[in-house]
Image 1 (cartoon, rainbow, N blue to C red):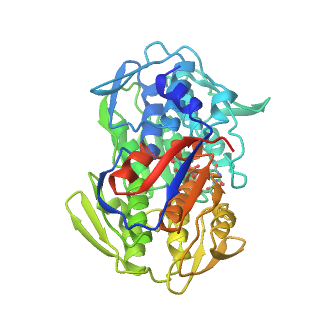
Image 2: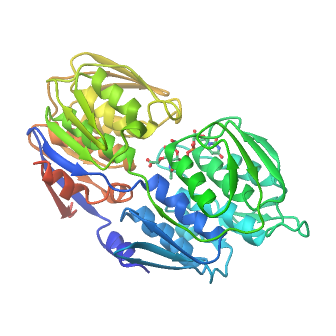
Image 3: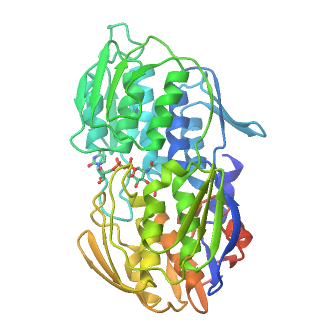
Length: 438
Ligand code: EPZ
């Protein structure tokens, strides 16, 4: 078991103690993107050999994906040059429940296993803190490529037809996504690249993480047209080769630190990011009154004083990301005015609202719409993290609040923020990680 996995388990029940009320100032470097690293790691299964992925963030979720790859027989090691994934010894096609239940994104191995081996047995992901998260589009995509899918004892059991010359037996297809899905697009794409014939896939997700996945597949020898558009044409090939790739910067992590600057009336700079990937977030921060300047791969935010209330509607890329919704709700809790926040991607992603209310926020939730009436200030309180982005919102609220805030169950944060407490301390925050004894 990799060192980072054990460390994460040991720190599982830590909490973050925050003394708020001071403006953040300074600069932090953005890590590689979790939501890009996970599919890139899964894609290594498509080609036997040693792949090198650099700038993989050290997170609980990337550690989980390492364990999934190791459970499949791959060898993974990390050194100064990056993460080395050797998939020559891949011997199993089963992704076990114990791992998949902790991270839905483990399902990204379904497409590659089916495409390379013609078989896959992947546990259905467990529920998520906020509502059901179906995988029907992942399954429909595989069936469109000719696979037979059964659900057996909580596992997706997928089998491809044999004898058509494709490594795994899949065949090209036409597939139109009824709704845009990041994960299902990634899975179908990774399966289609080794299918026999042409696949026309429409209404695909165009999130930067998917565009990078497509670029990695092309670097491995895949034939894909239309990358970056909602219509992909994939010409199946017989085999792929290992490659090396650097993970793109994390646009959500960058947005989170900038929102922390707005929240604390501070002056924060994030470096080594891709400003174009977070354009909608920057526009939302500007609408809330902050000044944003871009200089190459550096983005700086100067607070324009107390934030202004501003309405927000989440959407697929390049719209405003649902993964920044909670953080911007935190900003709205101390804004001058009212903000209406509508999440069109997840209809019940407001688990952070009652926790923010414990700190004095005024939030009314009705289905997928939340109305936030800004208050002069928040007051520190013990609060509980419920999911990754909800916990980021609680940290931001704690940074702005008077007094002490104690965020418990921060293992949620460890899933997606690399060295969060250290980076916040670099911005002058008074935060401390402690074992949660309460
Ligand atoms: C990815 O999840 C991200 N996770 C999520 O970020 C992000 O919130 C989401 O995309 C939307 O941007 C990773 O990349 C690992 P979807 P994913 O399939 O792929 C419905 C974070 O905080 N749907 O695009 O699971 C689904 O219920 C995480 O880092 C189906 O109905 O999201 C949702 O309403 C949280 N059937 C919508 O589509 C399916 O088979 C979008 O989901 C698949 C999805």
